[in-house]
Image (cartoon, rainbow, N blue to C red; front, side, top):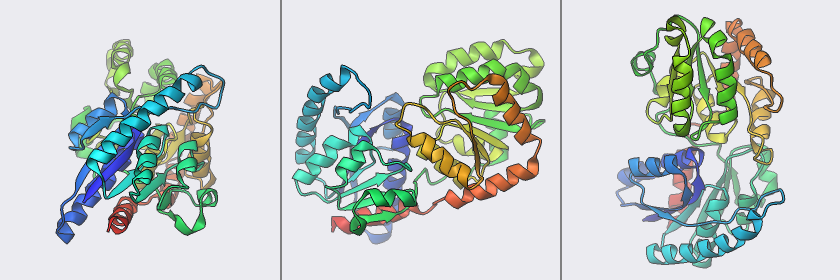
Length: 368
């Protein structure tokens, strides 16, 4: 059995692909068949590293992006999209998959569209609470459309749309406080705040944290995932702390296997509101403050307010968010452990631990 993955972007798109890949390998062992994989799309350095780590062959395919604002890039990307279609046509013809899995985003369009032209069965997955333009377009070509939020089903044909939730890495719930202590040199003398800006970090979120870092480390221990490009800047702020406060600030560029330990140790999570991050938060039943990014057509914002609607998260809007308001919101939550426990329990309502297994079974079924 040959499976083609078509998507791109950052770790938020790659980790769900890895989750489905692992479940397909488990099914292959259980049912005694062989499975091969190929990933085509356009990913960043973190994505490439993840694909290499999990032994998924990768071929670069360009894709054009439609921006919801005036930009000369909307014109130049037309030619990039045409080039990407030609590249995808070559790779799909050469590989000839039994099934294609599209994870969304503009980078998934060439692979999914060319697969349809070759009459390859297609599964696409929409992870956000507002469907992206790519998946809205590709839905007409898909055999199965899997969605993460109930209200998204109304945007796709009923007969081929199914609610599955979001996928994440299979071991994200298997962290331990002991390993977290070793990995991050935690003291456990104060409540632990985990800050996640996504696989590329989040410069505005990082800057907000660094501005309040001296006050924050007076009464919290911080694990801060800053993004690979921001490690040197994090080091600068770390060195700016006094000897006592520096014991309570721990930073990293990007985490894969260690992320589960960070979640287990955390008393509160501050994060962007990408679908993969929310999936991790919910599976670990953690309370959160979500700060949605402002340039994704409202998808993260909608995701965040879905969580807030069930009382699992507090949403803070990034534009004009004063540092002192951010600091006071963290302090207010940490002082209410009963509220944090309740928020964590409510976040479990969005957890879908079997999503990757279900999708793997769907991929296998339509490939027959």
